Amino acid sequence: MEVQAPAKLNLTLDVLGKRPDGYHDLRMVMQTITLADRVVLEPTQGGEVRVQSDLSFLPGGEKNLAGAAALRFYEALGRDCEGLDIALTKRVPVCAGMAGGSSDAAAVLRALNELEGTPFTREQLCRIGEQVGSDVPYCVMGGTALAEGRGEVLTPLPALPPCWVVVCKPDFPISTPELFGRIDSCRVRCRPDTEGVLAALAAGDLGGVARRMYNVFEDVLLPRQQSAVGEIKHILIECGALGANMSGTGPTAFGLFDREAAAREAFERLHIRYADTFLAQTV
Figure 1: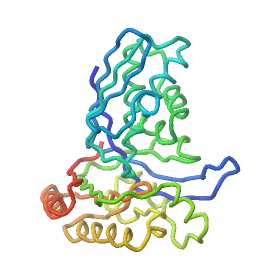
Figure 2: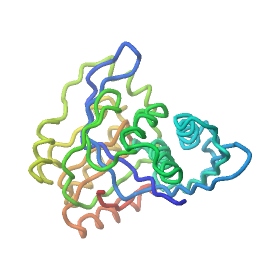
Figure 3: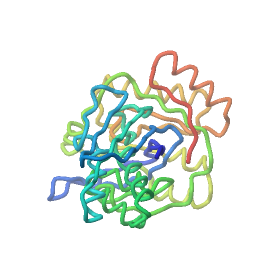
């Protein structure tokens, strides 16, 4: 079976505080887009779950979220996996704030559920995914949703009006634990207008959503990181984006466009400088 594993973007991201269990309470409006990995599952014999990818540095087996998802699925089913080969063709950049690994895991859960005759509801699949990673339940659900708790408490929202998206990842990594550590040690000066975004979604107001997008992690980037993300956002807005934001803990920035021609212009300008630049649409 071949399935797609679409990337997610954060239309908003707010960190409400650190919890006693070490996680953080988050409040985020999430959106899936057409940029996606390709995931192929092939049942085998021998009881082993194997994961292969076109990126040689990614781990295999249970160390890969896709492999871990397969094992958690069969544990919930109450029997051992007879054997499974998972092949990943990566298009979503790694460590980019777009839940590429979590989306691969969610795609495996959805595919196995279909292969096994749909023993689990979507909500039950989300709970299985919660054991794999905080973003996996949202990636199982997809679409437009409010994510709370550590990301696993989900509320479906009215769909974001269809639009074009230009996604651009600068060529440097960002440490997620380091970024959470920085936000714990400073006062958050500006927070997203989440209620305003929810109201704009309910009204079908794309511009209203785009103008209110915000991610609190942008305030705690290092100066070099902040400069690069800011420059990408500036180019997106200059080309006609209705709004621009950083996704997750970054460093990917994206813009929402209501005109394909403007989105293509932004894509062409950014792609010259950044290899990981993509033109997509919302799902």
